[in-house]
Length: 220
Image 1 (tube, helix red, strand yellow):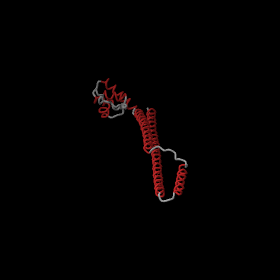
Image 2: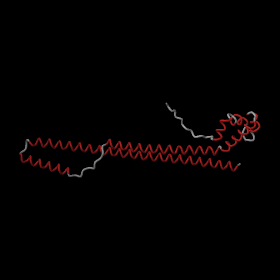
Image 3: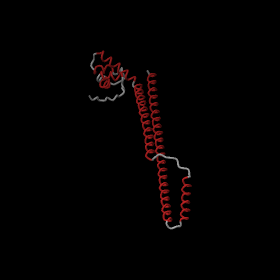
Image 4: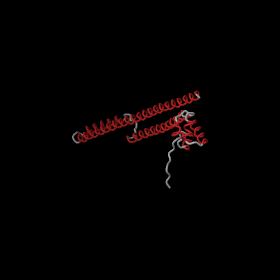
């Protein structure tokens, strides 16, 4: 009997260690997903910053071009025609030189970048939630098995006591006085716990830790 009790304690300890390991892995997985989502948010913020800088540069170039056009229009009416042609050619050459510079690569609008960032973060969070739910279910099942292993001896004794109580034809008080010492419990425990509601105790002895199932109401 001592060897069996030791084996049951070892099994319960193994299940407990397994549950702790699953909890640590679950925490590590959540930290990785949070880190990945933070990195995606940082990428989106950097892209937005570059877009704002590009927009500011474009506005500056447009203002410079408008200013040069105003200067050209004002000088056109106050300089000889030959000087106007030379000035016009210089402006055209300058614009061509600026346009000859390598163009910047196209970047999607800021709204599209933010949308993609939110979509990536949402997918990561959904994946993390799904993995967390699976790991939580595994931890529940592991705890349930550990509890079954921990209380296996007590449940077996309860079932045996109930069978003897049914066959004896005695009252609960009489049976508790006679059998409490044989089952290593007190009379009050035998009377108030083990023999309180025989049918309920029978169901408990068969499955002491049933999995909880949510019942959803159906509307006609």
